[in-house]
Length: 501
Image (cartoon, rainbow, N blue to C red; front, side, top):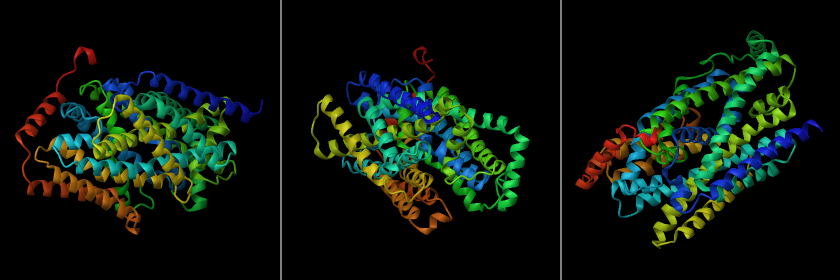
């Protein structure tokens, strides 16, 4: 058989496995709580790997290596900022959010938590949050579909549109029926595959080239020819540029598809184990992605090759260095990164559409079956709209991810932190901060100002200040809110029970 056939067999086997996992999850999905949150039964290891896989997307295997390939270690500040942000998120948000969402009327979405936590009877807070989820996740899901189309175009000489439809179709299938459990279980398999691939590719490439010294010489030779400095963390960087890169870490506090994993854990005490597993995974995969970009520079230079699209450097090395079957499995890791994120985002988008918009505006009591069916209709709707947007290829994967990441970080990040740690927050303060952060991030990201400072910085600051100021100017929350705040804090710091160890 030809090399292409072996690679195709490996990819098809991977896709079939994902569909099988989705079917297994489908058989365990009975009501909306199962479909949206898995019944709060996630083991911390599953939550950690799922959060990591759904977080990183095609950015980790395509966007970041491509940026390193083009500009060098100066682009690694993003990975550093993300790692710091993820650790803080697991440390300070995970245990409290898990406790508070259960105490506060068993909230199963972030918008419903805001409403219950702040006693918003107007429903404005929940509807605004649901709308923000839909707007920014449309761009986020589109970025995954762009990555999928680029992947198949580069690896199998398929058309971009065909690749987009394959990735979108398979992901939609297992998410549509498997819901949160389907997305989470596939995330675990995909997270492990991504880890293996990002460890294997740099190691094999370094050995193949004759050691790190040879790789370094190749990078230096390429830099001399192009007047670049790939091994410098500051070459060509400005202070605001480094601040913008590190500021990606702020986004973690407001990413619905990540923090929903915290809400689904068995108990708040699980956050400690989850943090250790999740951050270890993140450090290893981040180092692998950075090394892949650097090694790609040396490999292309030493062998006198040319790479048309920098974001395919990981795909290029995998296909060049490995047997077609192994290369197929390594390439499947790219699909894993793309599909894990799309599936998680579709679930959260669906929950926003069903729980936070349709049910809130119609005020109808629906059966458990009807709610699940409505959730699936939401998944389908968001996927179709995102697919149509992905047909436009004028922006890069990193641009789309960065815009959506900033939107969520600025809109939800300050409100999540204040909800968990500041009892004085009011519904009007939260609404003002959320809308203000989202608007500033959206407008800044669409203006030339984003070239000098990442939009999450002004958006986050505006959201935080607005929420605090308006809260201090409006009526203090009632005694019941105070009691709930104290109870959530108590549960968040309670020791693990034998059932959760």
